[in-house]
Length: 303
Image (cartoon, rainbow, N blue to C red):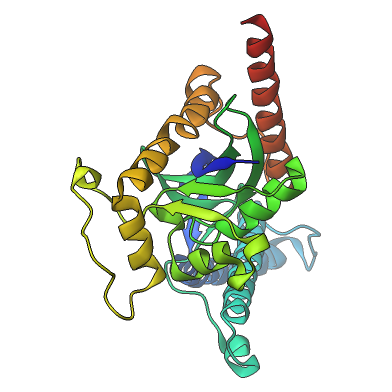
């Protein structure tokens, strides 16, 4: 397989961001509802005593409806807090922190939980912040076919380069010779991965933007001479994309992968997932990508 272009797009979840609540707000809400429960119980006890004096000592079997609603809400808040607390511990473990630090890890006050689709996340999309998933696609340039895809809950693309390369190999049966990607995928770790730790047979040529470029920035002539001593992989990539050959290769990226997202979201109107939960969403996105490829192959046959 030759050059492949990567990108991700935020696809709205089947959930409203207004059904999300932060960890800090959950603590406030729990306190508020508990105070309401105390008040309702006190009122119910006073009413019960009044009825006992009037009708005798009789016991009802059901809680007041108002109290039931609050007890249900408290149970949901308790479960939501447990989920956020587990996420905080999982994040600490993934960062390689000690067992004691993992045990003590707590969510930040702003960490969010959505009650409609708890596995979706608040992400910044083209039209502001949305409750969404991050859908990834790798596209080959000849026919615009999707050769690798996945869905992640991560809001950015920094950690998606390696999983996407693995997805391409697993789904297409081939390892790409070169990867084109925007600055969202740029990091020392990702560039090191493309070099495959010095194994020439596993190396993937990278053309990854190192930052947001101003209009015409890559048209500036490449600096001549050796790179400074101690130059990082990101520095070397920046110089590579400033060369005439590097600019020409990278310029093809936006003409390959971005039109695919345009076809899916604009032409086909797939801007929001129908299902809920990451497992089902991954299946839904796989079907979207499959049907895209079928449409591309059909169009090629008709040409």
